[in-house]
Length: 120
Image (cartoon, rainbow, N blue to C red):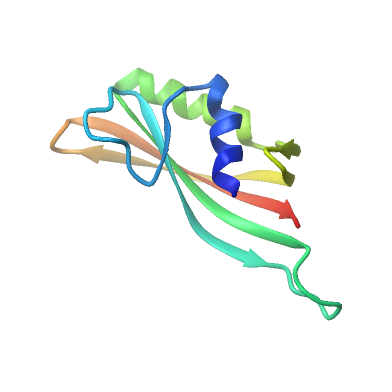
């Protein structure tokens, strides 16, 4: 559901966005995403009309490439509002970033966390 909107929103930043794991042999840089949680906003009138997703995007690449990609991801998604792929996005909020390193490939990564509020 929300994955299609993430891929669509990031299409101007990078064409390579994958859920969970990139296919073997994918050239760097690329982005993978995972939904960490989906928390409903329940109320006494019935089911949730607003869910908050915790999303983590990980950008992988070399040095300056991954730094630039991470900055572009943040500026594209942070504070976004609108309808995308049938998802009514109330707001996307940047929630933090962490450095990563893959010893096998010797590439660096940036794990970028967002909260995404979706109206149902």
